[in-house]
Every structure is written in structure tokens, then in C-alpha cells.
Image 1 (cartoon, rainbow, N blue to C red):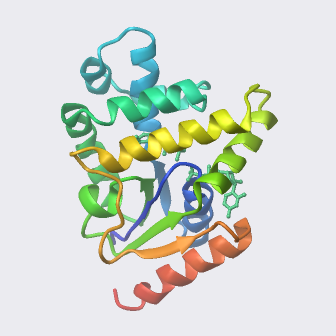
Image 2: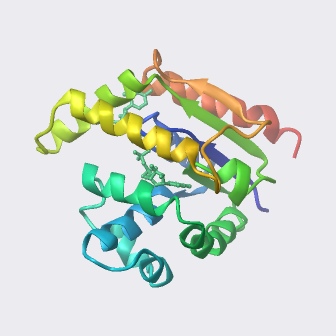
Length: 204
Ligand code: CDP
Ligand code: CDP
């Protein structure tokens, strides 16, 4: 049986962490769709035209170790504005969403564009300051030197680009359950997410 959990929200809101835990809880497969855009963005930084990179995307690209850098995140949000790039990535995401056995996808447009028929939709948010603090801590942990103010500026730039674009802008689906993680630790956020999914699972 197909059962799709769509998890959208802005950068560093906790989507990935929640998605992994929810997928594990229900025994579903998980796709971090941001990695698709990051893989294209990284190839663009190497000089490859964005559309060529999107067309040539292969699974191995998603395992590249250098997809988590701030430069790649910015490049990803720039290629994500291009409708032809987004169109190239749709079929793979839709097939994943409707696979047998259940799927969790996290991104920006899963509940609105990729899988509007998803059985459960979550929109995970947190204040820009909390999100920048989390991303800053992650980068410091990974040994990537940066400062908090710069991370905050980049988070806000990406928010503006992701919400302001014409094609598949970041916004909650009308039927999404919103979870603000600003004041929640990971365990509490995951518990709320599982509860929200269980609330609709009984219906299907
Ligand atoms: O996938 P997304 O960019 O939305 O966020 P993430 O990678 O899941 O989380 C960003 C960072 O925030 C990670 O280091 C998480 O451990 C942390 N986090 C947190 O401290 N509290 C939460 N409630 C959720 C995530
Ligand atoms: O981990 P974080 O939330 O910082 O970013 P990400 O989920 O890896 O996404 C990187 C960029 O890809 C975002 O800023 C978006 O511009 C783009 N993206 C998108 O447009 N649509 C998606 N479904 C996922 C990501």
C-alpha cells in the first residue's frame, strides 16, 4: 500500500531529523529531496549548466560528501528557482512518494506540488534565529569555520528565494499540520510529528 508523509519547511527547521525518525518509526523509506537540488547546485559550482546537471542526475550524486556546505546550499536554492530544473526532478520524487510500503519525503513543495494527495502533511518551522543557531552549531561541529551572523544572513536569503519564487514556492499546504520547533527538542518534535501522522492513519 502507498502511504505518503510530506514534510516541508524552511532551512534547518528540523525536517530531516524528524523525517528520518518518522520513517524509522513507521518502517517507511525516506527521501531528502533537498539533496537533489544540492547535487545540481554542486555541479553548477563546477561549471556545469543547471539543466544539464538536472538531466544527468544519478543516485551516486546524492551520496557525494560535500553537499552540506553553505556554498552548495546557496547554489541549490538558485537552481531551484528554474522551472525546467524542477520539472526534471518531479518524476523521480513522485515515483518515490507512491512506492509500495510507505514513504516520507522532506523538502519545500512536497505537500503542495510533488504529492498533493499525500495522506499526511506536516509543515515544520522555527524562527530564523533558532534555525541559524542550529545550522551554525552543525557547521562548527563539522569543522567548517563560519560565524553566526553570516549563517543567519544566508538562512534569510534562502528563505526569501524559496518563498518568493513563482514556481513551487515554499508554503504550507492548506491541509498541513504545522509544527513550530523553536522551543522543542528533537524528541518532542518527533513525538508531535508521529502523533499527527497517527491522527490521519486511522482514516486510511
Ligand atoms: O532538514 P532541516 O534542514 O530542516 O533540519 P535538520 O537538518 O533536521 O536540523 C538542523 C539541526 O537542528 C540539526 O543539527 C538538528 O539536530 C537540530 N534540531 C534541533 O536542535 N532541534 C529540533 N527540534 C530539530 C532539529
Ligand atoms: O537542509 P536545508 O533545509 O538547509 O536545505 P535543503 O532541504 O537541503 O534544500 C536546499 C535548497 O533546495 C532549498 O533552499 C531550496 O531552494 C531547494 N529545494 C527545493 O526547492 N525544493 C525541495 N523540495 C527541496 C529543496
